[in-house]
Amino acid sequence: MLAVARSYRSEVHKLRRPTTVAAMGVLAALSVLSTVLTFALAKDGPPSAFGSSDGLLPPLPALATPAGLVLGFRIGSTFTGLLLLLLCAAMLATEYNQGTIRMIFMREPRRVSWLAGRMGALLSILAVALVGAFVISAATAVLMAQIRGVDTGQWWTDDALRRAGKDYLNVLVGTTCFAIAGTTLSLLIRSTTAAVLIAFAWTGPLEHIIENAWPDATRYLPGLVFANISTGGNSIAGYRGPLLLGILYAVALATVGITSLARRDITA
Image (tube, rainbow, N blue to C red):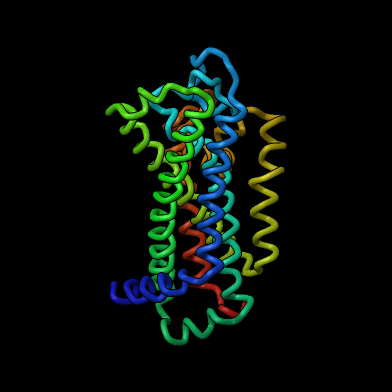
């Protein structure tokens, strides 16, 4: 535990770098952009389909429901997850490319403890950054509601606040799964360029191409499963299925990454 705590403090200090701050700023900007587009492109229509993630453009009446306050934040969570996947894939692989990880393990040979502290620091900062993005997105939603003439009376009820809290937790769990996947990928590949390209190609075009040919892919492919957790599920996969499978994926990926870090030679 002492080694984990030391690693945590060290990584929190390193994550104060301008590049990390810029990445968190991009995360907030994506949430704002998603909220603006959700309101700007919404059209009249029945709100009965609200609650699924099948469409990226909910009808305007759906924005007046208790979940409308953070609907843009929830829809944009898929892009947030992709950003975290790429960031985590690049960050740890860079340690291998620059040779700094060898110096780290000369001072701290307990590799698994170091990794636990590192991930704890990253996820702590992620949780704080998501709170910031959540608040900014909600403020943007209030402004856009005034512009589009959306009734916000249901946004401040107890039910709305419970939904908002649940949406935040879903996004946090989904992005955590993306972060674990990116970290594992970097531990296995150890090349910044290759890790980023594979992460982007798989969760971007490849999974969606497979989904177009096989709709049930949204139930099983890891990137789609993690995205479904973040958005609260959809009409095809539901919510509990992706949540359980996503946790299993995250545990399996973490196990593979830890095993690779503990057993492989650092120079390999």
